[in-house]
Length: 323
Image 1 (cartoon, rainbow, N blue to C red):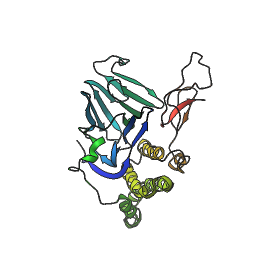
Image 2: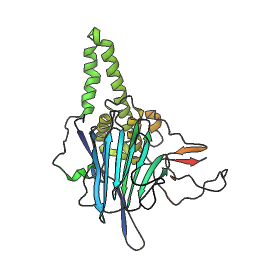
Image 3: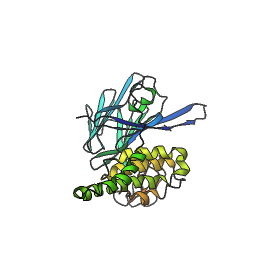
Image 4: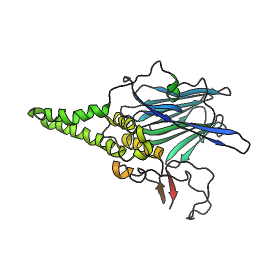
C-alpha cells in the first residue's frame, strides 16, 4: 500500500557554473534525495516527502535521447528500488544488486559506465551529460544524487523539478518543532499520572525526545552557515527522523548532507560525528576514510606503492584514500 505523501519545503539552490577560456559557460545542476525522503531539486525549494509509492525523480529528453529515473522507498525509509532508463537501456538498483537489461557486464561503455566512486557507486552515461551516484547501506540506499552538465530542459518533470509545479504542492503550516516540544513536556507529565501506561508512554516519549534533542544540538552548531534557515532545517530534520528513530542510516545521511552543504570551513565540519554518534564508513584493505578528497584510488603497477598518484577527477564527496 502506498502511504499518503507529506511535504515540507525549504529554499535552496544547488547549481554551480564555471567558464572556459573560449568564454563558454558550463553549469552543473545537482538533485539529491537522502534520509527518509528529503529532496533537493536542481533549482528551487528543498522539501520532504514521505511515501513508499514509486516516484519519477526526473524525466527529460536531450538531443532526442530520453532519460527517466524513478525511485521507491521501503518501509524502513531507505530507497529500496531505483530505475534508471537512458535511451531504452534500463538499469535497476535493488537489494544491493545492479541489473542492466539488454547489456552484459561490464555494461558496455558505449552506453554507460558503472564504477566505484570513493565510498559511493556512480553511473555515468555516454549518451547524455548525466551521472547518477548513490551510497548503499544495509537495507537500501541512504543517499542518491543526479548531476546534469547542461541547462535544465523546459520539458523536465519529476521530483527534481517539482518546484515549477504548484498544482499539487502541499504546504504544512504546523511546526513539528513546536508539536514535539509539546509532547516532550506536557504530555509526558500528563501520562505519567496514568499508572498502567506510565512506563510504556514515558519510555516512548523519552526516546522521541532524545532524537529531537539530537536535531536541536546539531543545528545549534550550524548558525554560521545556515543563518536564518536554521529553524527550517531543524523542522526538516524532525520530519526525516520521525518514526525512524532506530535507524542510524536515516539520521546520519541527513546530518552528513547538511554538513557537506556547510563546507569544511564551517563550525560543524569537525564536530558533527561527535554530536550525532555517526560512525565513519569503513574502507577495504589499507585505505582510510577522508571526508573530502579525491574520489578514486590511484592505480599503479606496484601494489605496495604508498604515495598516492595525482588524479584528474575531483569531487567534494567523502572518499577512501591511501594511507
